[in-house]
Length: 240
Image 1 (cartoon, rainbow, N blue to C red):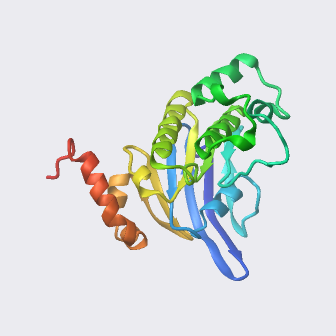
Image 2 (image 1 turned 30 degrees about the vertical axis):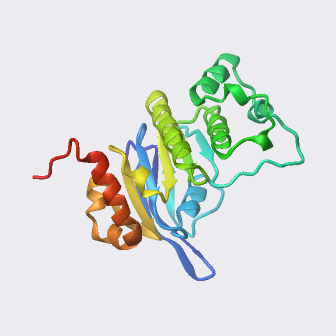
Image 3 (image 1 turned 90 degrees about the vertical axis):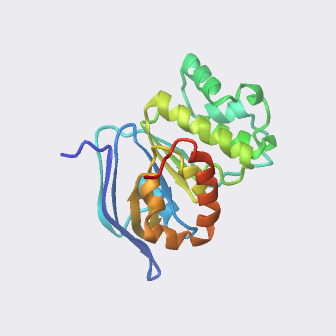
C-alpha cells in the first residue's frame, strides 16, 4: 500500500486524435509541495481537471487514499459585472462556516480590508487572494492551484507565492501548483514535475535545471532564468 494521498497510474487522454496526456504517473503525499510546469498546451490544466474529477481520462487510474478534500483555484475566473456581490458574500455563498475559522482564514490571506468591496472591483492580486481564501475555507488537505499568479505583476507574484508557502507550512496540506513561470519554481525544496504531454523529468529544482529535456523545452527562458537563479543563489551555493 502506498502512503500517498493521490496516486496517478498511467493516465492518458487524447482529443480528436491528439495526445494531450500520455502515460502520466506520479504521487502526491500529505504535506508535499509539487510544482507542475510545462509550456502552454502541455496538458497541465487537463491533468488538473482529471484529478478533480471534472473530466475523465481515456485510460489509467487514480487512487485516492482516505478522505480527500480539495481546495482549488481555477486558472481563469471572472466576476460577473452585472451581479453586485461583495467579497464576503461570495466567500460565504452556500457555505456554513465557523465564524472563528473564517476570520482566521481572512487574516491568513490578508483580505480583511476588502471584504465589503464588490467582487468585480478587485485588482488581479486581490481576486487571487479571494479565490485562495475560498479554496481554504473548504479545509482542504489537497490544494490545487492552476497558474495562480499569471495575471499579476512581479510584486503581486512574489506576495502571492510567499502567501502560498506560508499556507503550505501552516496548514500542512499537500499543494499541487501549476505554473509556467520558471523563476518561481526554482524556490528551494519544491518537487518539480515537468510535463509536456508526458512527464519529461521530475525532481528537485537543482537537478531539473541540469536536465537536457527540460533545457530543450524551455530553451528560450533558460538563459534569462539561469542569470536570475545564479544571482539569487550564489551567496550560499558553492559549486565543487
